[in-house]
Length: 568
Image 1 (cartoon, helix red, strand yellow):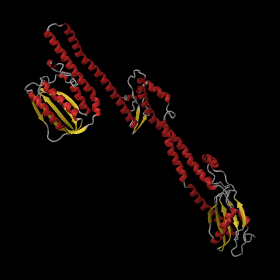
Image 2 (cartoon, one colour):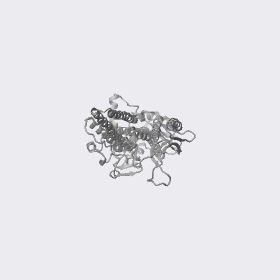
Image 3 (cartoon, helix red, strand yellow):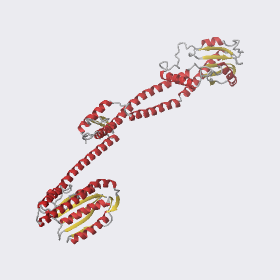
Image 4 (cartoon, one colour):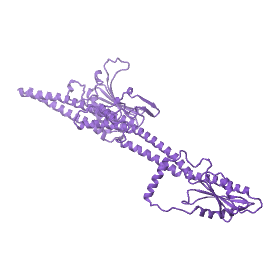
């Protein structure tokens, strides 16, 4: 089926490397090799299967990436982290003010009694973008400042500055949103108004609070408010606002890294999908094109030669199984074609002999004048006609046998009951000729699955053959033995046996080894048909001569033995 020396395969477990993607060039025809060269390695445009593999792999990857982005809790974690940090920083600023307050004297942040708010704020080192507001107990703002960073890095800025993928997707989303829904004023409450609403709770509760600003009010996300205490009483409050876009920048940087990995995974997935598709689509295309080449040649009435299915049997996967099955199917088809051609030649040869005899007898009949010679010629003609009729009938039965073996439904039956009925009928015929008919069948049923009528035809052929070779005083013995998962049916006779040179040919079509007086009475198809039926049941059949134990192989046989083995 294949040349293992030309495949150059390297096996690694269940993965075959090397020429496993397509059949080796030496195992395919020139036309198929030319089509493969035109196709190229990656056949995305001409292969629907390749496109489907890529699309399905990308869909799964996109769903995974979208799920990661949708379910990612990093923003919530960042908000909690920044809120805790912001509350601590607000408490530190309040402590700076509290450290400057007199222990028992009155404090007025508006008038500057007890602490200078402006100087204290100016002395603070704040991160860039942070805003600090100071309020008196009445909620009146007495000071504010904005952090410049003083050389401190802006921690909210992602690595590399801008996020190309995130910014690009955001721009696309904003453009789509602008088309779908018209722009509207989304401005929310002012920061001052929101802080004024939160101050009474802070001053009364004397605890640090962190709140999220309403959307649209400003670009800051969080505000921390804490009281300035003197002797346990609130003399003011500090409000610390986070830098504008700090959390969003951190989230955008985290999302950018996820998207970068997604792009890398996307490229890897496309590449691996192309490689995977080439290991599936290209071999399947080779198999299909090899079959199409044979079909196209037949359609153009050309001589197709042999269809060469690419040899992929070394692959340990379904494509290897498919290649093995197709190669076996094509091989069986060609064997059947060769068998039919040989059968037609044998039929022509077998029919030609009686036709030639008929032609000679008819030609001679025209010239013969004597009545006794004319009667002899008429007997020859009648014999040849009967021979032709028998031959045509047997040929018709043999030609229909294959189709009937496939169409007929196999059933389970008892082999011993069938043989018992045959022995009863054929035994009477043998005894009428003076032949002893002996049977030896075991007790109990022997159940087999098959075509009962066809197997009965086999045993009828074997027993009638034995009867035809026996003379008065001879004996025929039919016995059965069960051996594990097989049953043996043996037909023996004490006739003249089988010539040694004929043992290898008696199951061939139209071969007959009979005495001169029986010439023309048999077509030579009986044993060939029997062998075909037995092999269709996964059985075996053979013939041998019966010889005495330890006898010389050249001595005359004591009879002939035919053995049929069937699975049970």
